[in-house]
Length: 224
Image (cartoon, rainbow, N blue to C red; front, side, top):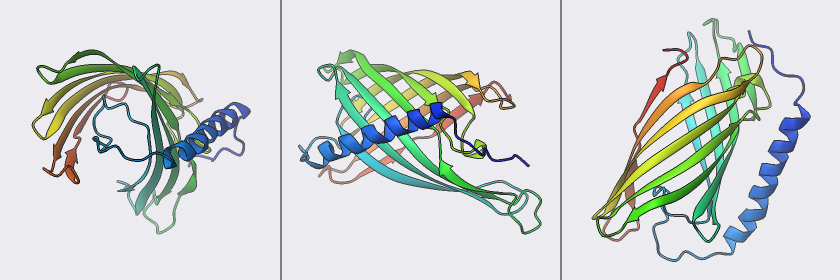
């Protein structure tokens, strides 16, 4: 059984504190802004809006006994450099319970801060006549989890590219990302993945509701 970390490194505390401070600062700004009627679904990768959202994901884990994971994510996005770039940051609270031996007792029962990631994105090509665009960016995945089991144990870089095709009521925006670790905790595996996202958005005619799906393919080259 993996032993939890008894201490959080000063480096991780500084990273986590800086990100949370930024989120708290910008949340006050966002609360004062009014919706302008534009696409606020958060699904268009080239809509460089300023917004803050919180969402939760609950998963059942494939363990011999009962297992579950509950992850709450806070996400903030803002444009900068005359709206030519967008900065996005995600901070997570992670909770994992798992019975690894199917004996009715949880071998893992941990909760705390998860990993943080941030992304810088820009649009080098936009063709409004044919309703299409290309966005490119770099995502940085930081090893900030308060306990080993709550994060990947790696610091990784993830360059990515999106092709965006605007439809009559929505968009199709497939994305390609290569994620590679540049630093790993002792005993943690490298990250070496290719991720393909197939973002599809269908808006209602009144633009007040929508359907969104994002099937994702992950090719893990480290584990085959």
